[in-house]
Length: 195
Image (tube, rainbow, N blue to C red; front, side, top):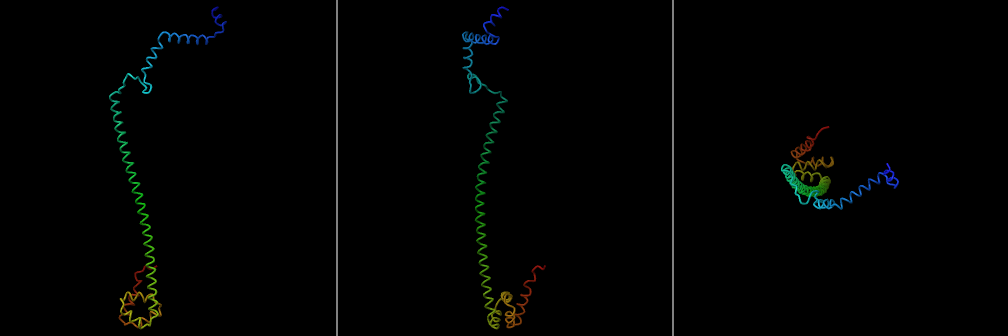
């Protein structure tokens, strides 16, 4: 008990005593060569690989087989991915070309529609002028012209003329020509849908 009091009288508590013992133990190890042995062992450690530099670690055969199969599978997947990437690039190029061609076709279609509309308008203008010419001719002279025309063509002009002018031209036609043209005019809308 006295010894205990002496240590405590000096001001050393139990924690200080444990710390002192640990420090003395460390010094003894360094002096006794234990530290050198530990340093030699640590020198053999391959820090980057996580193992020992002087030792090789071969995996078991079944693990090696699985690892090789996984490596081969990864290579096949990489090849497949490269093929898909190339195919996607080709498809994107083809889609762009198709879009360009479609735009060109739509532009050509619009241009064709405009050309046809102008042609239809010009043809309609020409037919309207010719109809006006026939309406303003003397009926007997117009009848002579209509006699020489194809009946369907003559019926087309008579159908467009004012009724009074058309009646005077029909009066000047021969009965056979007047009959054929009248039948054509009457049957022209026979196949049109009824309401």
